[in-house]
Length: 91
Image (cartoon, rainbow, N blue to C red):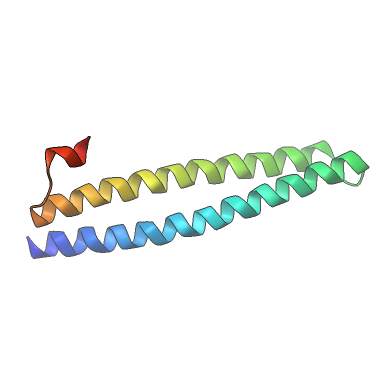
């Protein structure tokens, strides 16, 4: 029981760190996309640069959504492991 609680706690802590890192990566990817769009408009970038940065942004957004889901699920597992999970937590 204690080992499951400890594992769930560290999983949530790790997930929160990953979410923060991915939020920073999302902001960076958005900036790169904006810069590539501007570069394309003024003629110093090609369309594939814009498409690649857009693809990177969408990939980062998908990873961020998954990480947020994993943190929520980890929080539920933590509550289950320490015996404080309630029906209201699932809604």
